[in-house]
Image (cartoon, rainbow, N blue to C red; front, side, top):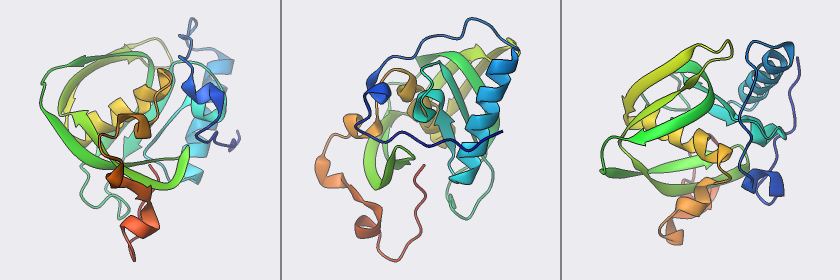
Length: 177
């Protein structure tokens, strides 16, 4: 399909709540997901949300295999998640460094819940119901935030821990997302 331009922080679409998907297993939905996948892979991201490529729909994709760009991250299964709902299972929070394809070149220390349950649907309308923790939980929360008009810098508690990746982590190759 196509690699699409990724909207960057400042674009008003990224601050909107995305509309739910009403029909599954359609050519349009499959084309959107393929464009998201092509864009995510071209940018070497861990995930992407439809609003990031200019489509205000509740669709995210994510997945991380063992990868030198994410040396400390456990694997996250390749997932298409539509119309998600998140349930916090632990009030415990953990701060971790995040980046984003829509905030290129920057990193921030972001607090996230350590254990969540997420539900939603795949592109065919099959239900998804998973309980996750750690990096998997962080990735899901980050991507779903895009559907609710939230970018990770809005969650940073202390802006001393937000800046350009090459300044914060000199001599290290740090992924955007």
